[in-house]
Amino acid sequence: MSVAVADDGKILLHCHSGCTYEQVCEALGLQNRPSNGRQPKSVCVATFDYKDESGKLLYQVCRFQPKKFQQRRPGPNGEWVWRLDGVPRVLYRLPELIAADRSEFVFIAEGESKVERLRSLGLMATCNPGGAGKWLDEYKQHFKGRLVAILPDNDIPGRKHALQVANSLYGAAVEVRIVELPNLPAKGDIVNWLDNGGTKDELLRLTEQVKLFVPDEPCENSQPIIKELADVEPLPINWFWFNRIPLGMLTLIFGDPSLGKSFLALYMAARVSIGGAWPDGNRMPDNSAPLGSVIILSAEDDLAHVIRPRLDSLGADVSRIISLEGVRVKDEEGRENQEYFNLQHHIPALQQAVRNCKDCKLVIIDPLNAYLGCKIDSHRDSDVRSVLAPLVELAEKNQVAVIAIQHLNKNSTSNKAIYRATGSLAFIAAARTAWLVSKDPSNPDSRRRLLTPAKHNILIDPTGLAFELVDGKVVFENEAVNITSDEALGNTVEAVVRDEAVAWLRDTLTPGKSLASTELDKLAEAEGIKSRTLRRAKQEAGVTSYQLRIGDKTQWFVRIGE
Image (cartoon, rainbow, N blue to C red):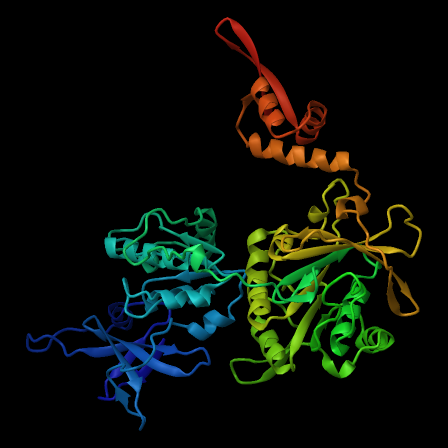
């Protein structure tokens, strides 16, 4: 409960759990009634501050009793001005939204008191000023990479508003869900639902169960933006390392421990710091790294004992290389604390470091999993996307190469290299290029290491490289390596083809679906899958056969599972 004195001397009461003025008066034993049969004078009973990204107060929304809303802004002499001429309309609780954990849902309600009730449960919530129908499409910039749950009021304007917001955020947020709460009365809302016994845990469970929003028909405030490809100017890719690592994009380097992934990343940092030549320069049109600065985030190697000595041996200009050690943050009381950097909360700090670092060309994150944040499940696609989307955007905006290091998982049964990076496949999906560091499969006991392309959406016929770590230096061989990442892991072509056939079977025989055995054979033949490969893939995918009598004939059918 907040108690304050209005400009006219009246007492202002505001419950941060969302209770109405009438409920507060009833709880205190106060009566709110007209005197001498006249309507009571309108009284401001609650105020809601709208602040910009830096926390500066822009304006307030005042709730009056009898119920009405009015907006005011601070005047030049400390007075209130009851109009918002030229003041930007921002989201309620915007600074808190920007700082919120990206792995948790942001609830969008219809009104400030509902937002405060949700926040009292420890949930992140916001709303637009003005109520239903006043959503601005520009608000979607604050929801990129986030999980969004919209809570509509149980009336026609509320449902239309929810649809407008969902259409606006679709494609910007990682996930958008419209959560229609059960057993709401007409014109009911989240506050009514909570007052009737709803809980935080139940709300989160309901939210998880709701299907992801996909636009069906465009609403009146959401229309497709069309651009003809004839009007799109094709742009060349800017290369950090020609035909291997692009600028402005995320690159993944993964492999088993102690094979030289971190050493290789420091080699690239050294090349950039002096604008040095790449080892394949004799075969490429541009044989030098772009001269610039480097930011390193290293969770496994000590700066003084490992990283600095390695950079010195690699001939780096260490005056162009910095290490991001953590982030200074202030608590609610203004005290300064230091936090371990994580991608959930501290992308703005990394952005500031990139801008302050003169002509930054490279950011190294080693290993990536160490910087995800404690609440991120690295095996959950939506969690990974919510963290990597802002990182990818940072790379593009600043035209820096971001190289992230990852280990291999222990799934040695997989025959495709792209499935061997630790965690969700969303890591590989977010990267434009991915490179595997492995032993030489023909001589695994040697010091020879291979760097082979595992994913190369933008590369043209990429080749691998072979290298050794000799006396603190990375020594590359002159000749290219023409084997795939799958082969570098010791996988045969037959095994890879069988993996692809297993994936095809699982896509074709989705859970609960059956096909006639003869029909499956025809489909497989059309896909170029040989009968021998199909037979082995069926065993690996868990395909079972059963008979059905149709009329006078018995026919064989197949499905996955018993």
